[in-house]
Length: 129
Image 1: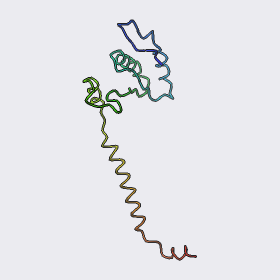
Image 2: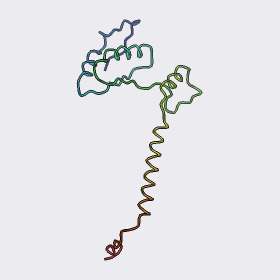
Image 3: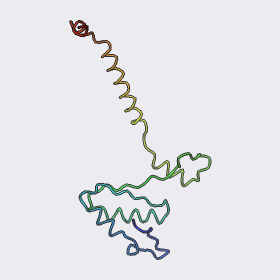
Image 4: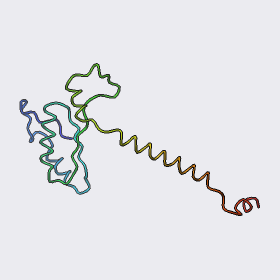
């Protein structure tokens, strides 16, 4: 959407990109989040910071795609910068695993309780008829 990234060394400034259109769209009440998908370069980071500053009053959540270990990547082959980015952007998994485990455990308890609950008196006779 932007048409590139800010690059002062290459003479690319905000006026050369469609940043104004992005800022305008972000102020639409229907927009709740702006996801910045920019390269993990100095120019990409500069552009992300610049846009984030412009969006401070837009009442939107500004996020950025994570950078780091690629799916299927082996740690032995990662450079220090990639590994550093992955470590900085790590997130807890325990909460998700615990939530799933707790839900499964609760479902199992409910199933056991339902199986152990005796039938109401006369319900077997009514079913037989």
